[in-house]
Length: 197
Image (cartoon, rainbow, N blue to C red; front, side, top):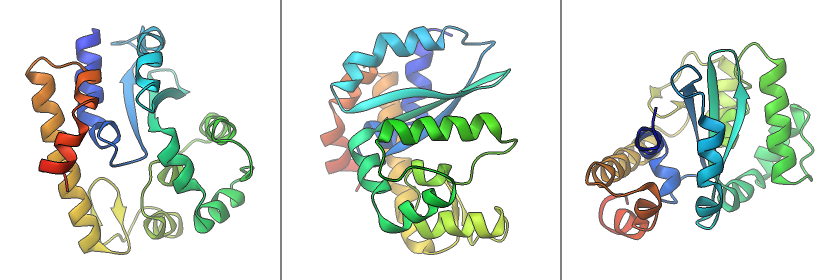
């Protein structure tokens, strides 16, 4: 897999993060197809961080890497909500620690669990009521399924899903037109003002 393919995958799966609409996304990469992922991330690290975007491998199992792509300012703000803090406290997070410490704890939880830690929805910026519903019902009985499983406000979720779809279309079109991820991030005002809200 080349850097162009990496950019295409990130542009498709992380467009709401790139455009500043969502705190984080999680992307899976095959180790077989992209063994050089850590080096590629290193190449992008400084330039993306200047745009407020960070990337971190949170799990590297036998066959896949799980890459967290996030806007640290948005994610920190989201995780400061009282209900988010209460849920994280239940899973052993130091809620007064730094974002880096929380992500380190998330990595530990991935390493020691046989299933996705349920709090991942908090790190991905899902509505807290939907995260609570997923925790309570184990993923079953949701009202709607899209970018996440919806247990609470279906109409609001539909609006968000639609804006994410438009954002993804915008980002994918720019990448197909030959723009780099960094150039696309610089166009976020076009996406949010014309297409995504």
